[in-house]
Image 1 (cartoon, rainbow, N blue to C red):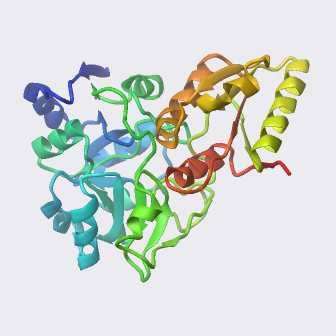
Image 2 (image 1 turned 30 degrees about the horizontal axis):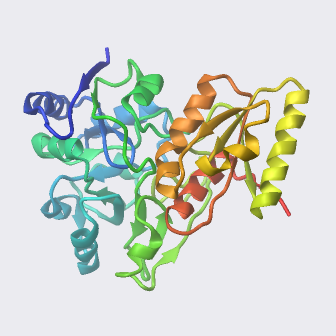
Length: 348
């Protein structure tokens, strides 16, 4: 049975944290809030506990999970030969939405990293996550707390929708503030490489890593080379097909309008994910609108909620357009591209 416990991030109840920490230490699964999305956590030193994560999510064994730590000095307990650059990045960006790919320590079971010699590590900034990590006194392996390939969970309700009965305990600390997963940087080669854009923009990272490269790949489940979470071709997908439009803004608006009217004429229910300033372009259409907010930070925080909300309302398709691929816009594009299974409708 899954238990749901509400916890105030500003006034953390130590008794609730200790209860959750005990579940982790005993090999159980705890879903908990981070600043990015909700994580589905297990003791990263316990291979049987980590295996429960893959079973609960329906996640392929080829897709590695991130190890979370509560103190920077724990890095040497989960990774070997930590380069000075990792320490500089941790000092600047931890706690926060940055994941570093390093050489895996023997204490971390191979299942965590899908058998690879590397390990992905981060230190979250959410006070509930930090309290849990410090109370558990073990690193916690935690992918997003949702069924595999579904939109990530940014609220405790999302976790319940996907994993009720498959997780022992959910700590409800309110909605995740960023709403997109962490940025993943591989430090095992030279130069460093971004494997997944996320909550820390490339522009910020390049203040310390001017040679930073980007290697965003779309891989299928049976392909080799899945170095980090979030690299698979289909990911973050709502149940309804997601149609991703790209191109000059006016051309995109016109193409989306035509698509809505065509689908409506064929008896299809359509949902639109839009920014606040775009309502006047679409509110006369026979479609359900989900307003994600007015800027990239708001849109990022509401993206997965928007997908899930339109799914709950039973739409047959979800239409959305891309945003400028700078700052958080690059991470948004990455999530939308995978949710659309790599298909883009180009508008000229």
